Structure formats: C-alpha cells, structure tokens
Image 1: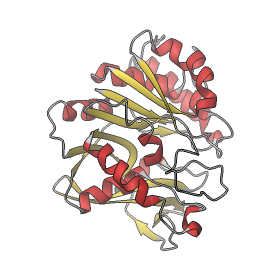
Image 2 (image 1 turned 90 degrees about the vertical axis):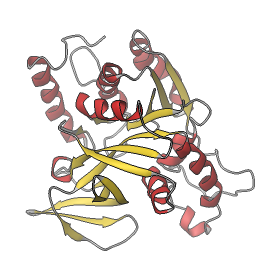
Image 3 (image 1 turned 120 degrees about the vertical axis):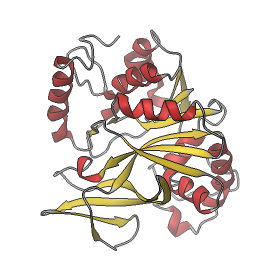
Image 4 (image 1 turned 180 degrees about the horizontal axis):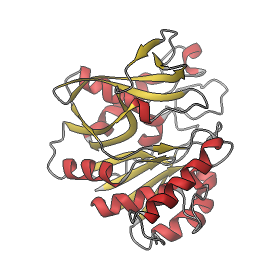
Length: 295
C-alpha cells in the first residue's frame, strides 16, 4: 500500500516550507513522524508530491532519512499541468489538492492513502486506514474523522472538510472555512458567506483518506471539466480532493466510511503554533509513544 503525501504547498500563512521545519532535536519534520507511523501501520511505499524546484531539497533533508526504512518516490505538481487547449489566467497559486494528487496518477498502486505533509495524525489514524484498505472493495473509501473542536486554532481561520454522516458513512463532504468566534465554532462552505454555528463534536476531514485507483479515474475525468469553467472562476478556483470525493458519493460511484480516530491531531497552520507542537512531541517521546531517535 502506498502513502501519498501532499507536500507541494509553500505554507504561506506559516512563512515558508513548513513541511521541512524541524520539530525535534534530531531534525525530524512532521512528515517524518507521519511516515514512521504509516510504516508501523503497514504502508510499504511513500510518494511525495512536491514542487519540482524543491526536489533536491527534499531528497537531501527528507528522502535520505526515510529511504532507510521505506522506498520513496517523487511526483511534481506543476502550475502548467493543464489541458493543452487551456489558456490559463495569470496566477502563481497551485490548482488545488485534486490537481496535486493527479501528479501521482502513474505511480500509485491499487490501494493508497493520502495525507497532508504538514499535519500530525497519530499512529491510530494510520492503523484505521491501513486495516480498512487491506480488505476494501474498489468503490469503498475511508476517512479518519476528527472532532472539529480538536482541529481549530485561536490564530485565525482554517479550512476543513465537514462531514454529514449516516450510519458511519458520509452523506456529504463540504470543504469549508472554520473559525472560532468567541465561545462558538462557526463554518461556511468555501466561496460562500453563509456562516453558521456548528457543534464542537462535528466530525471533519483533515485530508486523511484511503482510496482505490477508482478515485484517480474520476479525477482524470473531472480534470478536463474543471478547466472549462469561466475564466473568472478559474482566476482563484481550485480543483479540490474533498469535492471529488463528494461528487463520487453523490453519483453513487463510491461509499466513504468515516471512522472517528482516538488520535490527537496537531497542525502548524500558523508559525505561533510551532513551539506548542515541539513540546507535544517531547511529551510523546517521554511517554514512550516514539523512540528518542526515529530513524
């Protein structure tokens, strides 16, 4: 099984390549911990989706260490990876997470997981995904569900996929903006100004999924549809993974199971959160959840 890591984002709110910001005394990064947990859970290959200009940086600072325990492949998200007939508007921002995942279309195996490079998910979450994929059918997907109250920050707005569930299965997955406002948590679908209060126990996606290649077939199909949108929509539009998953659910092409994970999620959306996360890693090492030296 493959672990696909979305690592092409520059992390503008964080202020640089937060994917390779050391978070312990050994110089490990968030994704080092994710891959440590993933290999322990049963994943046996890693595909890093990055910007091509960062290849040597990732090989030197990430690949050398990881290759000691698992094969590492690289795929590149490129701004000019668009249909030949498309005349793109001027923009430097990547085209979104589904566009990034498409970069690995010739590399992924029949069953694979997808995560963000800058999120800490915890071993239990990887075990949920890995165990599911070992016996899943091609039209069955899985996501780890996190309580929204455990995924927000006091530093500003964040993006989360909000699940609507029935009997442990997702009915909808809506990519949304979420923000803590006073004692409440409020959310609105992306591109809308429809803020409303949501329960702190609402389950959200942190972009931790398990898929079959059936998803890649749908992405390839919708890739061309996306670029036929009006130019005004494409100036800031994104081809998003949660939207693709939701479209497959609505079209009865796939069932998305959501399992609440007991693991604690950590993220570094804003630079001010870095020191808190470093302390959390130290505490987990003290508790024996991780060895003093990962690799």
